[in-house]
Length: 298
Image (cartoon, rainbow, N blue to C red; front, side, top):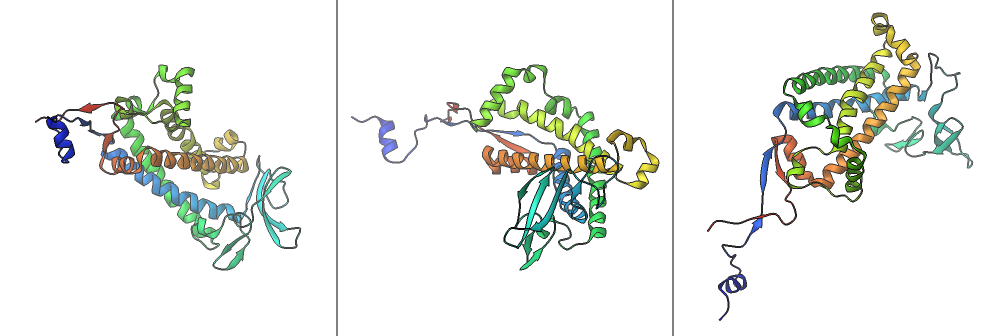
Protein backbone atom coordinates (compact mmCIF):
# COMPACT_ATOMS: atom_id res chain seq x y z
CA UNK A 1 0.00 0.00 0.00
CA UNK A 2 1.57 3.35 -1.06
CA UNK A 3 2.51 5.94 1.56
CA UNK A 4 0.04 8.85 1.91
CA UNK A 5 2.81 11.42 1.26
CA UNK A 6 3.74 9.69 -2.00
CA UNK A 7 0.06 9.70 -3.05
CA UNK A 8 -0.25 13.42 -2.30
CA UNK A 9 2.94 14.22 -4.21
CA UNK A 10 1.73 12.25 -7.22
CA UNK A 11 -1.54 14.17 -7.13
CA UNK A 12 0.28 17.51 -6.91
CA UNK A 13 -0.75 18.09 -3.29
CA UNK A 14 1.94 19.32 -0.90
CA UNK A 15 2.38 17.36 2.28
CA UNK A 16 1.49 19.36 5.40
CA UNK A 17 4.83 18.28 6.84
CA UNK A 18 6.86 19.26 3.76
CA UNK A 19 9.39 21.95 4.74
CA UNK A 20 9.75 25.15 2.77
CA UNK A 21 12.62 27.64 2.71
CA UNK A 22 12.67 29.99 5.66
CA UNK A 23 11.90 33.62 4.82
CA UNK A 24 12.74 36.61 6.96
CA UNK A 25 12.04 40.26 6.20
CA UNK A 26 13.94 42.92 8.12
CA UNK A 27 13.82 46.72 8.19
CA UNK A 28 17.23 47.44 6.71
CA UNK A 29 17.38 51.15 5.85
CA UNK A 30 15.82 54.04 7.76
CA UNK A 31 13.84 56.70 5.95
CA UNK A 32 16.59 59.33 6.30
CA UNK A 33 19.21 56.97 4.84
CA UNK A 34 16.94 56.09 1.91
CA UNK A 35 16.10 59.70 1.07
CA UNK A 36 19.74 60.77 1.40
CA UNK A 37 20.81 57.89 -0.85
CA UNK A 38 18.54 58.88 -3.73
CA UNK A 39 19.31 62.60 -3.41
CA UNK A 40 23.02 61.75 -3.49
CA UNK A 41 22.49 59.59 -6.57
CA UNK A 42 20.70 62.40 -8.43
CA UNK A 43 23.21 65.07 -7.36
CA UNK A 44 26.23 62.93 -8.23
CA UNK A 45 24.88 62.05 -11.68
CA UNK A 46 24.26 65.69 -12.61
CA UNK A 47 27.53 66.80 -11.00
CA UNK A 48 29.39 64.26 -13.11
CA UNK A 49 27.70 65.25 -16.37
CA UNK A 50 28.04 68.99 -15.76
CA UNK A 51 31.64 68.45 -14.60
CA UNK A 52 32.46 66.79 -17.93
CA UNK A 53 30.99 69.85 -19.67
CA UNK A 54 33.37 72.03 -17.66
CA UNK A 55 36.33 69.72 -18.36
CA UNK A 56 35.61 69.91 -22.11
CA UNK A 57 36.40 73.64 -22.02
CA UNK A 58 40.05 72.76 -21.29
CA UNK A 59 40.56 68.97 -21.41
CA UNK A 60 44.00 68.83 -19.80
CA UNK A 61 45.34 68.37 -16.28
CA UNK A 62 48.39 69.93 -14.60
CA UNK A 63 50.23 69.89 -11.27
CA UNK A 64 50.99 73.09 -9.43
CA UNK A 65 49.53 76.54 -9.89
CA UNK A 66 50.05 76.94 -13.64
CA UNK A 67 47.94 75.43 -16.39
CA UNK A 68 47.22 77.05 -19.75
CA UNK A 69 47.37 76.33 -23.47
CA UNK A 70 51.18 76.55 -23.65
CA UNK A 71 51.90 74.65 -20.43
CA UNK A 72 52.66 70.94 -20.54
CA UNK A 73 49.87 68.78 -19.04
CA UNK A 74 50.46 65.36 -17.51
CA UNK A 75 47.12 64.19 -18.94
CA UNK A 76 44.94 65.38 -21.80
CA UNK A 77 42.19 64.26 -24.13
CA UNK A 78 42.53 65.73 -27.59
CA UNK A 79 42.25 65.17 -31.34
CA UNK A 80 45.14 64.66 -33.75
CA UNK A 81 45.51 63.81 -37.40
CA UNK A 82 45.67 60.03 -37.80
CA UNK A 83 47.88 58.07 -40.19
CA UNK A 84 45.04 57.83 -42.69
CA UNK A 85 44.59 61.59 -42.64
CA UNK A 86 41.36 61.37 -40.64
CA UNK A 87 40.96 63.03 -37.21
CA UNK A 88 41.77 60.69 -34.35
CA UNK A 89 40.84 61.02 -30.69
CA UNK A 90 43.51 60.20 -28.13
CA UNK A 91 43.92 60.17 -24.35
CA UNK A 92 47.53 61.04 -23.52
CA UNK A 93 49.23 60.38 -20.18
CA UNK A 94 52.76 61.77 -20.21
CA UNK A 95 54.41 60.41 -23.36
CA UNK A 96 52.03 57.45 -23.66
CA UNK A 97 48.62 57.55 -25.29
CA UNK A 98 45.71 55.37 -26.36
CA UNK A 99 43.43 55.91 -29.35
CA UNK A 100 39.91 56.76 -28.19
CA UNK A 101 38.19 57.75 -31.44
CA UNK A 102 34.42 57.44 -31.20
CA UNK A 103 34.39 57.89 -27.44
CA UNK A 104 36.92 60.51 -26.31
CA UNK A 105 38.43 63.36 -28.32
CA UNK A 106 36.49 62.68 -31.53
CA UNK A 107 32.93 61.36 -31.52
CA UNK A 108 29.68 61.45 -33.48
CA UNK A 109 26.57 63.26 -32.27
CA UNK A 110 23.41 63.53 -34.38
CA UNK A 111 25.37 62.63 -37.48
CA UNK A 112 28.04 65.27 -36.97
CA UNK A 113 31.67 64.85 -35.91
CA UNK A 114 32.38 66.53 -32.58
CA UNK A 115 35.89 67.45 -31.46
CA UNK A 116 35.33 67.37 -27.71
CA UNK A 117 36.97 65.43 -24.91
CA UNK A 118 33.78 63.76 -23.68
CA UNK A 119 30.88 63.08 -26.07
CA UNK A 120 27.80 65.29 -25.96
CA UNK A 121 25.51 62.54 -24.63
CA UNK A 122 27.62 62.46 -21.45
CA UNK A 123 27.48 66.17 -20.67
CA UNK A 124 24.93 68.62 -19.24
CA UNK A 125 24.00 70.51 -21.30
CA UNK A 126 24.70 68.35 -24.35
CA UNK A 127 25.91 71.36 -26.40
CA UNK A 128 29.01 73.42 -25.65
CA UNK A 129 27.96 75.87 -22.92
CA UNK A 130 30.48 76.40 -20.14
CA UNK A 131 28.34 78.94 -18.27
CA UNK A 132 25.30 76.66 -18.04
CA UNK A 133 27.53 73.71 -17.14
CA UNK A 134 29.00 75.69 -14.24
CA UNK A 135 25.55 76.76 -13.07
CA UNK A 136 24.32 73.15 -12.94
CA UNK A 137 27.56 72.03 -11.30
CA UNK A 138 27.48 74.60 -8.50
CA UNK A 139 23.75 74.12 -7.87
CA UNK A 140 23.98 70.36 -7.40
CA UNK A 141 27.29 70.65 -5.55
CA UNK A 142 25.58 72.63 -2.81
CA UNK A 143 22.67 70.19 -2.91
CA UNK A 144 25.14 67.37 -2.30
CA UNK A 145 26.82 69.28 0.54
CA UNK A 146 23.56 70.08 2.34
CA UNK A 147 22.26 66.54 1.90
CA UNK A 148 25.58 65.18 3.12
CA UNK A 149 25.48 67.31 6.26
CA UNK A 150 21.99 66.04 7.09
CA UNK A 151 23.13 62.45 6.52
CA UNK A 152 26.26 62.92 8.64
CA UNK A 153 24.27 64.50 11.47
CA UNK A 154 21.76 61.67 11.40
CA UNK A 155 24.49 59.04 11.20
CA UNK A 156 26.18 60.38 14.31
CA UNK A 157 22.98 60.95 16.31
CA UNK A 158 21.48 57.59 15.37
CA UNK A 159 24.81 55.75 15.76
CA UNK A 160 24.37 54.56 12.17
CA UNK A 161 28.06 54.96 11.41
CA UNK A 162 29.28 53.18 14.54
CA UNK A 163 26.69 50.41 14.28
CA UNK A 164 26.58 49.78 10.51
CA UNK A 165 29.45 51.47 8.67
CA UNK A 166 32.65 51.52 10.72
CA UNK A 167 34.41 48.12 10.57
CA UNK A 168 35.24 46.36 13.83
CA UNK A 169 38.83 45.50 14.67
CA UNK A 170 38.48 41.78 13.97
CA UNK A 171 36.97 42.52 10.54
CA UNK A 172 40.17 44.26 9.47
CA UNK A 173 42.40 41.28 10.20
CA UNK A 174 44.19 40.13 7.01
CA UNK A 175 42.65 36.65 7.15
CA UNK A 176 39.10 38.01 7.33
CA UNK A 177 39.74 40.48 4.51
CA UNK A 178 41.29 37.79 2.30
CA UNK A 179 38.31 35.51 2.92
CA UNK A 180 35.93 38.32 2.02
CA UNK A 181 37.88 39.10 -1.16
CA UNK A 182 37.82 35.42 -2.12
CA UNK A 183 34.05 35.28 -1.57
CA UNK A 184 33.61 38.28 -3.87
CA UNK A 185 35.82 36.71 -6.53
CA UNK A 186 33.62 33.60 -6.43
CA UNK A 187 30.49 35.83 -6.48
CA UNK A 188 29.52 34.28 -3.17
CA UNK A 189 27.31 36.59 -1.14
CA UNK A 190 26.41 36.25 2.55
CA UNK A 191 23.18 34.58 3.60
CA UNK A 192 21.21 34.29 6.80
CA UNK A 193 22.51 36.32 9.74
CA UNK A 194 25.60 37.46 7.81
CA UNK A 195 23.37 39.11 5.18
CA UNK A 196 21.85 41.43 7.80
CA UNK A 197 25.02 43.51 8.06
CA UNK A 198 27.60 44.92 5.69
CA UNK A 199 30.65 42.78 4.99
CA UNK A 200 34.17 44.17 5.67
CA UNK A 201 34.83 45.22 2.06
CA UNK A 202 31.52 47.09 1.94
CA UNK A 203 32.33 48.90 5.17
CA UNK A 204 35.82 49.86 3.99
CA UNK A 205 34.48 51.15 0.66
CA UNK A 206 31.68 53.14 2.32
CA UNK A 207 34.07 54.67 4.86
CA UNK A 208 36.43 55.62 2.02
CA UNK A 209 33.66 57.21 -0.04
CA UNK A 210 31.87 59.01 2.82
CA UNK A 211 34.85 60.23 4.85
CA UNK A 212 37.66 60.55 2.26
CA UNK A 213 36.54 60.84 -1.36
CA UNK A 214 33.48 63.08 -0.98
CA UNK A 215 35.28 65.49 1.40
CA UNK A 216 38.18 65.62 -1.08
CA UNK A 217 35.75 66.43 -3.89
CA UNK A 218 34.21 69.26 -1.89
CA UNK A 219 37.51 70.75 -0.69
CA UNK A 220 39.22 70.61 -4.10
CA UNK A 221 36.10 72.10 -5.69
CA UNK A 222 36.22 75.01 -3.25
CA UNK A 223 39.95 75.42 -3.91
CA UNK A 224 39.20 76.06 -7.60
CA UNK A 225 36.94 78.99 -6.68
CA UNK A 226 38.82 82.35 -6.66
CA UNK A 227 36.14 83.78 -4.37
CA UNK A 228 36.64 81.03 -1.81
CA UNK A 229 40.43 81.40 -2.11
CA UNK A 230 40.04 84.87 -0.63
CA UNK A 231 38.17 83.38 2.35
CA UNK A 232 40.39 80.32 2.87
CA UNK A 233 43.73 80.72 1.04
CA UNK A 234 45.10 77.83 3.11
CA UNK A 235 43.40 75.42 0.69
CA UNK A 236 45.71 76.55 -2.12
CA UNK A 237 48.69 75.63 0.03
CA UNK A 238 47.07 72.38 1.14
CA UNK A 239 46.56 71.11 -2.42
CA UNK A 240 49.59 72.74 -4.00
CA UNK A 241 47.77 75.21 -6.23
CA UNK A 242 44.53 75.52 -8.13
CA UNK A 243 45.64 73.27 -10.99
CA UNK A 244 46.68 70.48 -8.63
CA UNK A 245 43.29 70.78 -6.92
CA UNK A 246 41.60 70.48 -10.33
CA UNK A 247 43.61 67.35 -11.11
CA UNK A 248 42.79 65.75 -7.75
CA UNK A 249 39.13 66.69 -8.29
CA UNK A 250 39.14 64.87 -11.63
CA UNK A 251 40.93 61.78 -10.26
CA UNK A 252 38.58 61.49 -7.27
CA UNK A 253 35.57 61.84 -9.58
CA UNK A 254 36.83 58.87 -11.57
CA UNK A 255 37.33 56.85 -8.38
CA UNK A 256 33.72 57.59 -7.42
CA UNK A 257 32.57 56.45 -10.86
CA UNK A 258 34.55 53.23 -10.37
CA UNK A 259 32.87 52.75 -6.98
CA UNK A 260 29.47 53.34 -8.59
CA UNK A 261 30.12 50.73 -11.30
CA UNK A 262 31.20 48.11 -8.74
CA UNK A 263 28.25 49.06 -6.50
CA UNK A 264 25.72 48.58 -9.31
CA UNK A 265 27.33 45.30 -10.36
CA UNK A 266 27.08 44.00 -6.78
CA UNK A 267 23.43 45.06 -6.60
CA UNK A 268 22.65 43.05 -9.74
CA UNK A 269 24.62 39.99 -8.59
CA UNK A 270 23.14 40.02 -5.07
CA UNK A 271 19.57 40.35 -6.38
CA UNK A 272 18.60 43.65 -7.97
CA UNK A 273 14.92 43.67 -6.97
CA UNK A 274 15.58 42.81 -3.33
CA UNK A 275 18.37 45.39 -3.04
CA UNK A 276 16.52 48.22 -4.80
CA UNK A 277 13.29 47.51 -2.91
CA UNK A 278 15.16 47.74 0.40
CA UNK A 279 16.43 51.20 -0.59
CA UNK A 280 12.89 52.30 -1.52
CA UNK A 281 10.76 50.73 1.23
CA UNK A 282 13.45 49.88 3.78
CA UNK A 283 12.41 46.23 3.88
CA UNK A 284 14.86 43.53 2.87
CA UNK A 285 14.29 39.80 2.39
CA UNK A 286 17.20 37.99 4.03
CA UNK A 287 18.67 35.38 1.65
CA UNK A 288 18.15 31.93 3.09
CA UNK A 289 21.16 29.92 4.19
CA UNK A 290 21.61 26.66 2.34
CA UNK A 291 19.80 23.90 4.17
CA UNK A 292 17.73 26.34 6.29
CA UNK A 293 14.04 25.42 6.32
CA UNK A 294 10.98 25.93 8.41
CA UNK A 295 8.06 23.59 8.93
CA UNK A 296 4.57 24.66 7.95
CA UNK A 297 2.10 24.19 10.76
CA UNK A 298 -0.77 21.88 9.97
